[in-house]
Length: 465
Image 1 (cartoon, rainbow, N blue to C red):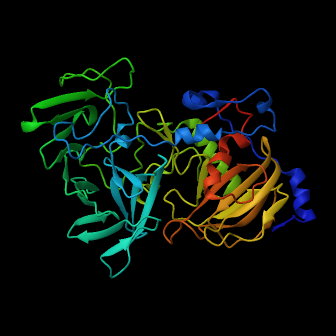
Image 2: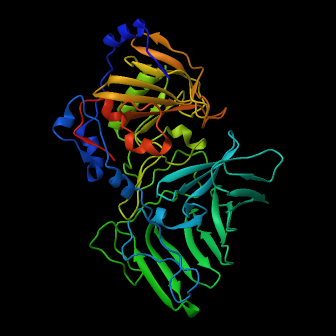
Image 3: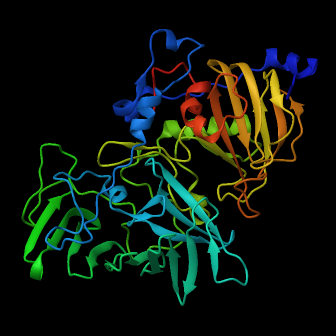
């Protein structure tokens, strides 16, 4: 059930003007390779970005390299002839209904008391799994639909899947928990070794087959595999983004190196900013993105608010959530949508711990009566919002919900409500949907979301996928 705002709300609707965001065409060029162009009519104020369902499903299709666990006369991993910059997502091992990219680390958030692991879902989208430590217990279950379990064995952490596969994570030279061993359910043992720079250097199975990663100044330049009796077979695949370049059978490669997200100096401080993968759809945080986030923070937050609506979160959030949560693209060209795809986070401080009042623009004609029971979500329907018409705004993690008009905005409470928030991590998650949708089910939201940057700025000519 929804309520109509009072006459006081309607009077403020007429006077409300959202400050314009200046998003330059240059900043949008980053997305043109995967962007959906607007039609001539879509440039009008009624325009709303849309995405064909079949196209979306194609983008979410998973593409990981197959492991050859039994035939020792074949390489351990079936690599294609050409490897692109997203290879770190494709070298993944099955973890129940997920795929775990072996280049990723297991992170621990000391303040929140939880572990964070990035996996890939069955549809190919990246997902962050939180594991909350239970005092007095040596093992806990992931707070997800999976049956993954984590146990401590000395300084190592063991993750066991429902089929009995065990992942061992040990401290690397940089202090991070990296996968050091996989005991497959069939009895195969896979060992992972790291170099002095804490970068993955070698994968080997119990039969002696190896996968080696060759670096040039912390940059991966090629992958070499050995296999067969006595490891007499050897082949090297070059990491290359040029479709005309093929793999080579020697170690002499001449390609532009790829900087993997995990590669960094061994002596770097553990308190680091988020590392942006080279296969991020937008690998650089531009001035236009910063201006967009600043303007959105002024619209939805109080003084000192920080917004993240372009895939990049504040550098100070590295200790809370060290993983990049924007869109990624695999070496197969398939886009993996991230948690911040067509969505924004609002923080009260750059480290994600500050309290903050939460606002929405005036002009809505309906709103939900109270926050939803699981994730404290409140929805607002706008006949017109910024450039667009017929838009539903959903604000998740709303605390102390109460509508109070303050000038050209409406205060709806504070950030950090139920669902996804702990005492040390306060934020609200904000999404915009096409049409009068209320709160859509989770599976319907990706097709309905609108890029926040297109709503309040000048009418766009392109929208990112």
